[in-house]
Length: 189
Image (tube, helix red, strand yellow):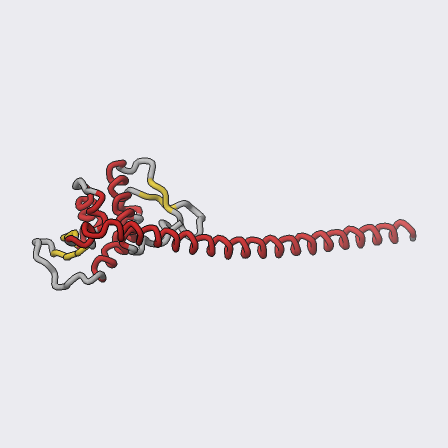
């Protein structure tokens, strides 16, 4: 009778220890999740602080650019179907630093070069920047690749990407940031 009782007590002790270990593991998991959530909030606050500091800095630089920035707008004629190609070509021409500060004025043209109806009061420019970033990050553009398993999605230049095009995309990124236009998820980190 004693060996059976001993085995029962031993198995009960093992089960009790497994249960205590499971409870400790669940508690530690909850603690880690809470720490992760707290860190996420802290990082979001830091991101907001950085963005506000950046915007203040850009506003100061724009104020310094003054007459040059307000002199005339930078006119872009773009085809919707060839947006990435046309944007990259527009930025391939040598640009001086003051040109980056000029307000962008977008006109969409059809395949025959005829202007589409519309006056750019900022809306067309915002559409161009958002559409460009959404399109250039797609696999078909052969410039960026998405890091697997990352949330939110993160993009890196492809190893076989055209370096010259990546430099031009960098200029477009600068213009998007200076103009305060959205660059899309994945590029904001």
